[in-house]
Figure: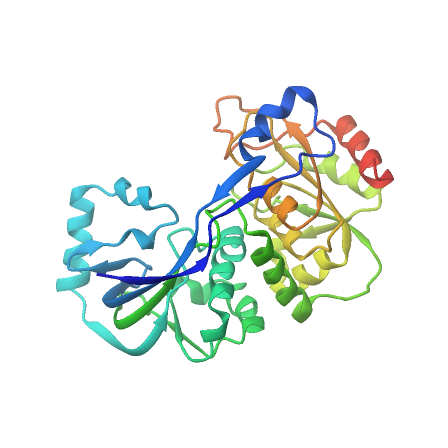
Length: 343
């Protein structure tokens, strides 16, 4: 039996529609204009085990708190669950973790967006305890270049990574739940996370910049006519950033100095988190994707002006959430003219 206390009460988030909304595109955003956010609780667990990959389990049962959404646990087959239990109970020895431990990740936390937008807000909710509790992380987090620098502003005292193949046996584990469901934001919390990160790595009163973040090195959701897009961006004075080749602190500095940010739907656009209130964002997004609105909701929570451009795909059979985008360059130029004029 777990015990829990309330961290955040239930609230309602109301979002500002895109400044360039076309009447026929309302269906893309209308589901997210107003959303009730459930309360967030701090769960205290006793005698729980953690696999090296980051799954919480007890008495042979994988716990729903391991997942970004509890229903994702249902994707596991019965055979898969049996293999997991056998491997983590019978084939591996456990390392005992004494004292109070903290767990803030789920099965989506390895991604840049989910780490910054979902995981760090959970850490913020228990910031008063981070020096005294030991933060436990799965083995893969050690290799993610953004993890340690993003933790530093929170003053985390001790971090313990599970080794690959290791099982951690926790006598007392504290698990703060999400500040808001993935893809949604508690305004006060996400703004506070921004303040902490920008105060550490930002550039203060640096001159305003125009930034385009490329996804050319990504495996999916690339821009198929990237060369043409780059020509347009340079014509309007935008700096080109390839986020994969930039350390975390450089990404924070670049975005915090930018008044205008353009990118296609993907991890690089997460860097809007570091922009000052009142800055402008243009998202290049698939014309058929009315589900993936996390950057629309993030922009509203951060008090950024959000605009969008819908894009087709040269592969009409590809799923909207993974398809490459083909950007209409003339429309892009018109959107940039309006963006930069403040219209």
